[in-house]
Length: 172
Image (cartoon, rainbow, N blue to C red; front, side):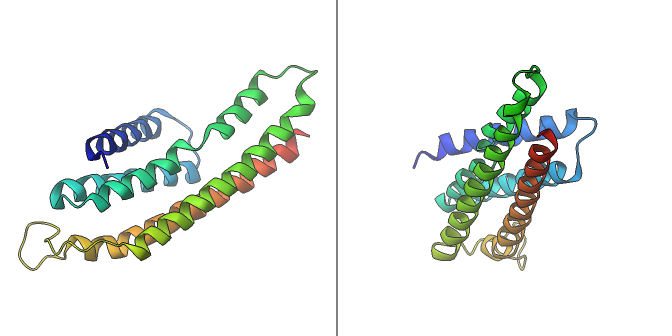
């Protein structure tokens, strides 16, 4: 695995999410939660890799970047809705229905894969989390934070599926 490339990918996705989080004036709670949780998870994976040199953290980062980089159908549906003329309006709901189905499928597969990866491989480094004697180890921190935050991320994605479906219905 090219850990430098994984590091660059994690950094770029985290920066894009941070930029979008800070630049949008009216972001709904679900999108804000998605961005914050993804930034936290990517930061933990990035820092964990450089702290422990365990490639499992780079693998976590790659899995997490999939959450952020599989949004193209949503962007296309929004673009079609904004740019469509009167003769194309009848196609708009189909774009949102497809985006909802695609999001449900891809996010479910990514969630299942990330849970399966973590359950199968997990992380066991034994290194202190904060360089302080007696502080929790990295694997102890990630054993708690990773499943909880990935579950929050998946719930937010399910909410996004529902929103896309509702937009499709209201566009009909």
